Length: 352
Image (cartoon, rainbow, N blue to C red):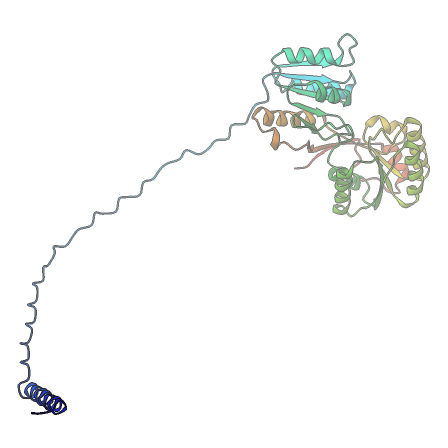
């Protein structure tokens, strides 16, 4: 009887022999190859008929009617408030009356109608705007008017706080460039000019400096705080200048000081350009003043813009375009060696 160990060895040999035969059988009888796959038949090509795209529509032409600017008209009812019956104020009221259909004039120098009463009457009417002529009228209008205000004939605008959302001004002086141009035409030898103003006129100083440069003039401009300081500065300037430019700043001018300045200038053969014809009789050589019709035209233009609702587009102070030159012929001929050019008494120049 075989032992267990021997039996185990016999079984192992049998298993090994079976495995060998199995592997040999796989090598002798390989697996059959699968038949080749059939190639797909080509699909027939379908030809699509051509598609006609719709023609592009013709461009649409829209005819736009040209915009015709229709000049706006001033307010239908205007109150013209004058500070007094001074001709400078009344003349402007007269000029305005020729251009405005419906207006009423109020005179603040009328003791029977104080400013409060006048503006209460304006408020109760159909007034659309107020034109204030002169400082008193401008101050009262700004304080009491409920409708837009356009003021004129006021020099110290900033110092009196006259500009507001509802208030606009017109320049009190002709363009400085035109003033110097006319002065040089009268006296081509003019080389240097002096001027004195009170504080708060930076815009005026800038305009004067630009005008002087444009016409090759050396400008000496000073700022004073009183009439006595004006006289002191003037006496120091006289020896350096050919002409003196006088501005209507009543804060730094007075009657006695003005007379002394004019007398001293004549003695030193220094020309003085003033802002009012009446000063020619006191010794001034020429006057550069505004033109009433030009002021009225400018006011109406501003009123038209305000009536159209464009007060924000109106400058704080609208400049003028004309200047009126009146000369003191006798005095000029005495100061100038040659016959002064262009002296004919009265000259009106404009900026066009």
